[in-house]
Image (spheres, rainbow over the protein chains, first blue to last red):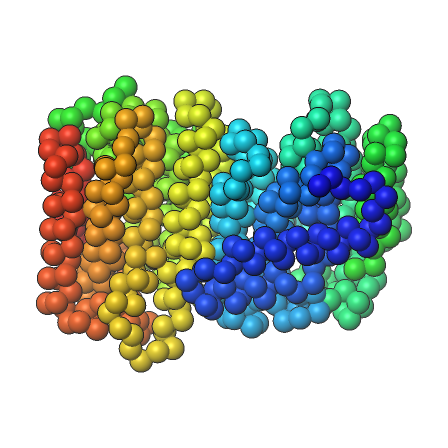
Length: 300
Length: 300
C-alpha cells in the first residue's frame, strides 16, 4: 500500500511506531538469552521520536514506495540509532543516567549487558536487511547495507564520536571542524535515511538524489546544533535526559564556540537551505517538508 | 589464483596474514579520525592466530575458490572477532589488561575509545562485504551477510556472551546448557567461517554443507573448552593474556563443572567426530584437516 499524500504528521508517527514494533517483535521473539532480549526490548520501546525512520517513510512517499518496501530500512536505522544511544550513555562515554525520561540501559541492566545490547542491536540492524524476506532484490539490499555501514561506521558516526572524544583534550576548535564532526556524528545517518527511502523506491533519479543530499546534509547538521541548544535551554523533565550534560562534561559545542544567538541563527539558515533544495518537489514532498518543519520547532 | 593443495600450514598463515593486512590497509586509509584509525590498526595488527580467516581459506580451497574470492569474507570475520575481543576485555566485561601479550585496547586508548573502536570494526566487517568490488554477485554477498550477522548477533555470539554474564549469578549450571552457551559464544562464528568459505565457491553442494556443519560445530565447541583448559594450564607469557582470569572472575567453566580430565577427554572426542565428518572429502580437505589438527594441539 502506498503512503497517502494527505497523511498528517501525527498519523505518520503512529503508523511508524506500530510498524517498527511489529518488525522488532518478530525479530526479538526467539533470541536465546532472555536478559539480552529484555534489554533490547527495553531500549527499543521507551518512546523515541522515530525521526530517522519517519524520514525514510516521508522520503519513500515522494517516490511512490509502499509501506512494506520501507519497513525494513526504517527499522534498521532505528536499531542503529538505538545502539548508538546505549553506547553513548555509558559511563566511559557521556555518562548519562537518563534517556527519554527513563533510566538508561546500563542503569537497569549493568554496563556489561548494555555494551552487549548495543552490539546486538547493531548486528540486528544489518541482519534484518540481509534476511529481508523478498520484496527488494539482493542488489538493492546490498546497496542499502553499503549506505548504512558507510554512514554509521568508521567513515561516519563512529568517526564523529571518536573526534568528539579527541577534542575533549583541546581548549577550542574551529567552527568548520566542529561542523565536520557534527556531520559525521549525526548528519551522515540522516543522509542515509533519505538515501534509503529513495533506494527502496523504483522511480528515483539522479537529479532528486542531489537535491535530497543537500536537504539531508543541512537538517543533519542543524539537528546536532539544536541538540546543543536544547541541552542549555530545555529542562530535564521535558528533555527526557539530564539538562546541562554538555556543560558538566565540559564539551565543546556550537553555542560555546559561536554564542547561543549565532547558533540559533545558524539552525534557521540551515533549514532555509534545506527547504530551498526540495522546493521544486512541490506537493509531492509535503510530508517531508512538514516533518522538517516539526524538527525545526522541536523543544526536545 | 586457486589455493594450492600442497600448501603448508605455515605458508597458509603467512599468506593469510599478508592478504588481511592488504585489505585492512585499504579500508583504514581514509578514516577521518586519526585516533580511531590508530586504535583499529593497533588491535588488528597485534599478532592474532588468524584461525577464523584460515578456516575460510582452507574451506574455500576444498571447493576450488580463488584467494580473491575469499579475501573479503576472511577479513570480515577477522574484523568481527577483533571487535568482540575489544569489548570482551573491557572492565565491565572480562576486565583483561593483556591481549596477545600486549596491553588491551582500552588500556592504551581509554574505555570510551575502545568501545568505539569495537563498534567501528563491527560496522566495517559488514561494510567491506557490502562494498566488495565485484567478483561475487549481490545475491551471494547478501547470503554472506545473513550468515555472518546470524552468527555474531543476538542469535549467536552476542547471546552467548549475554548468557555468560547471566550465569555469573548462578552457583552452577548443567553441562548441556554450558555447551549451548559455548556453541553460541564461539561455535557459531566458526560455523560461519566454514559456511562463508563454501559460499564463496561455486561448486558447493548440500551434502558437503551437512558434513561441514557437523565439523564446524564440533571444533567450535572444542575450541571454547580448550580456552578454559588453557586458562588453567598455560602461563601468562605463552598465553599472551593473563592466566587464571576465569578463576579470578569466578567463572563457571567446563573444567570447573566436569573436572580437568573430563574436559580434555571431551575435546578429544569432539575432534574425533569433526574429523570423521569430513573423512570422505579425502585429499581435498588436507589443508582443513591440518588446520584442525593444529587447533587440537594448540597451547595458546
